[in-house]
Length: 174
Image (cartoon, rainbow, N blue to C red):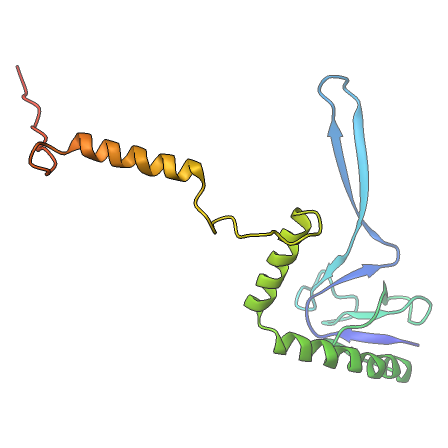
């Protein structure tokens, strides 16, 4: 047997799979397009409707559990408590991978990761090549034209003394 108790919320790929069905009707032809996607099942041990045993959720690998267990695909997570020797062996194997992932996550802050992902996205946007220069490294001719227009408009607004002319309040007439 390979059975685990869930200690926290999980999204698991189950057997049989959980599916999401998307339907869309073409307004011109009236025909309906249908797509089915396999999605993970959300399981929350704090929700009585998700519990398959009183107050707990027990999951297993295919053919390795009891009839009421929820069968899932993939490796267990750190928040799954092994309930038998086979599950303990699988969990022990996974602890090395979890430890390595934890170390990588702790060494790299989320902001560093975000900057790296943004750089990767920009590299992909430029066809796999890094951009030759920053988009704001040199002002463009359009920016120079805008600067000239602002200077001309500012000069028009200023009076002969170089100060902005006062704007008179509108006269109300009855």
